[in-house]
Image (cartoon, rainbow, N blue to C red; front, side, top):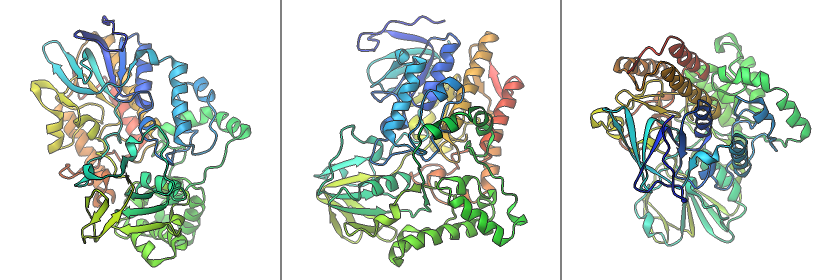
Length: 548
């Protein structure tokens, strides 16, 4: 075990180098588990986070209405039955405060807090090829020398906060949903504007509509929405899902999306139109993401299947919206259901019938600037506001890492390389960056088409097992080969190009960030298939990786 240089009372090494076996960036779902796994190996390891406490996504996303859209009993760690059964969820899709409490429960049960450092942002990481170690620097003046650097930064953790000209001139209050204050925000009597109607915008809008004086919604890309049904869980329901732990632990890691359900309705072509409609309607009534991730796999590849399911959802939305203008702005017509992130909603569509809500479509008249008094559109119209909420999304997949100055062999820059072409080896390593392991990174199942706890646990376990393999053979450095990376990218792209997803423009493809290379950010071959491929690499001695 490496020597750990003691930290000051404030938790920071001043002028000295902290020497570790492994350093983890992030204390969300992946970071907590990775810390636990590596500590079990007896490694000296610490996790660092910009936040002031644990939680990752569930620390930062505390905006009104933030909640799960994965069922609570599957958004879980599955490595410990005692840990799983020691927590009881209050409903099917609980809100952020309860989720944050759960993450604190995990930290306390596993005694992880003593190996964490908060309010610390990693600024630079350089690989020293001569000694095979990383030198990492933080904004607090820490210098960490570590054998392994493991990023658990999250797929959606680099918010797009500077989006419109003039933001700094606004005289009211402006929030990005991913940087929401811990103290409650009083909207009483306020003129509030929300920009964006993706999954986050929908949760905010449906939650605050009855709290504000007037709400103006600035809609950019229309979304297919599904109704969320979140029944309360009492002792009976809690005992019921806990009794299924073994079943769930065996099933969830091997489905297409890492959810409990899977595509089990047969082939689209083998069903009559009447049978298809009956299946789709029944699944829609479940009030979950099941229609997206467990109806017919052909919605991702077959234009006819896509259009039938898309029109089914459009019709359900039209029934509630009624007004042709609302339908035109809020219902998609130029992309298929499921090729973008599918949001769940609880009363979102009904909000637009309220007298204190105004809907502004931005497709033909975009926002030109934020002014001292509000939001100005391209046609010169200005909407006076007291509060502006940016539900404007993230630099997904890459942003959390490119905001760190990561330098690999020969001083190569990850930011510069990914600005040209986003490439990884199974989303776990990048050629040219030895001993740098990643979770939630591009070209692995992450955020899109994946229950995040399922995928992040698998990736954390693969990394821990790989490090154990290296230690057992007394090798110090691992690096993905260029050939293996090229092969993975080719495989990833071939699967992606066979789907309708790559024909659309969304954050899935990096289209929401100007100049970002176009590539499907998440592996679409299925969570179970991805797991099999990663397992095969480990079982065969890590072909495609070099050791020294």
